[in-house]
Amino acid sequence: GKIKGFSPRHDDILFFNKTANFKFNLDNIRIPQKYYRQRNNMAGANPGDVWQFSHIHYSSPEREKHPTQKPEALIERMVLASSDEGDLVLDPFSGSGTTLRVCQVLNRNCIGFELNPNYIEIIKRRLSKDFFGFDSIDDRINRKPQNLPENKEHSNDYLLGFDRF
Image 1 (spheres, rainbow, N blue to C red):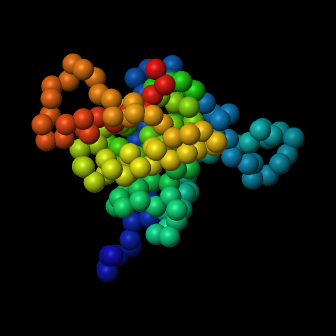
Image 2 (image 1 turned 60 degrees about the vertical axis):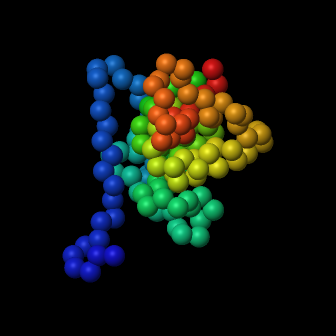
């Protein structure tokens, strides 16, 4: 840990869009109002641009062996705000597979990339777990596009995806 100075307690999340007509599902991510008055939106408040989520405790069942694993609730808020069921979500740095798992549970199509073989095994294990009464996913997790050049070092493991095509 850090000995001198304040230790960082936040992550920056950058939000970009190409046009002014981007998808933002506010109703999917509203939080309880601080004060309930008639003039407030009783469906809940906009969560704003500063969010508080606890880190994943070392004894949490969600915890994996990844140094920067994000809480599923954080990724869930981002996915719910920016996509609808059946939409495609890209995670180019899949790490521990949190985004892929959240997309699986929220019925989003998702493509993830990860080069580290240790993390690929974590992702496969997470995606094979049952959720909400459904059986684990099928062998399509190992599928890759046929037109990609063969990567001898990582074979089929460098492209992971969960989809319902």
